[in-house]
Picture (tube, rainbow, N blue to C red):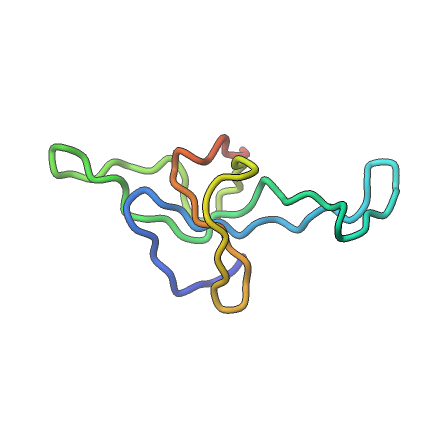
Length: 98
């Protein structure tokens, strides 16, 4: 897991995407152009939570170290300290792997 100097705001979450699959289940090696973008990754930073009308912060459902699945086109791709990261809102996360 990466150690980064980045703190997301509100209900945003920084995820380090998993590596793209290089072979199919049948053993066929995929060229770079045929690899799909990964849709799962590891949470490396979380924001403080969404600011509620009451003035308190809403609690996030994920924590640093969780493995999550997110939408194919959700979030923003950024490069931090030479590593590809994805910044998502909590609502962009579809599931947390147990």
